[in-house]
Picture 1 (cartoon, one colour):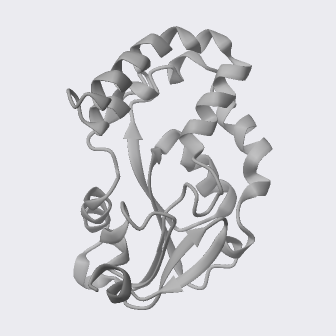
Picture 2 (cartoon, rainbow, N blue to C red; picture 1 turned 90 degrees about the vertical axis):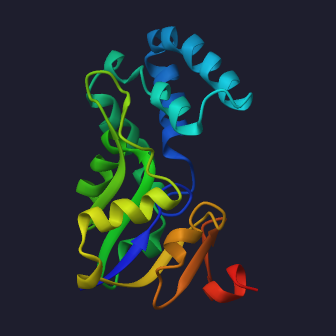
Length: 195
């Protein structure tokens, strides 16, 4: 089966959805800030190298159980129009692989109809990450947990991050697209990473 792989944040949409959703929640559900001192301490510990980025992200969405379940829908009602038009006409089976939380992107999978979503899983009761943050090499690992390596052929790969997504770009048998300021720029993997 031929597939295309897409990152989500700053690729399909021009923003980081997790960060923007957190800001939206602070504005509309200000009581969720009771969790923010823990997030601030976690950020400091991460910057000091005491905890990893994944450990920090484990606490970032602990406010999720404090907000109404309708918050995600209302957030995307406001921001769905910002989805890049080129994503709406996909030529083949589309796999979105993102570090963003499942509870946030599953709504967009329903709305946009892409075929498969692989993202960071969260406990709906606590907001904490389940397993690893779906970032960097973890994206490839999770892809092959979902699909048999010999049964898929990755054609094109789309992402805004050359640094973090070099691992999924390496899978492209067709074209690599770097998304910069909402525009697709085609490149060859070997030109960027093997020169």
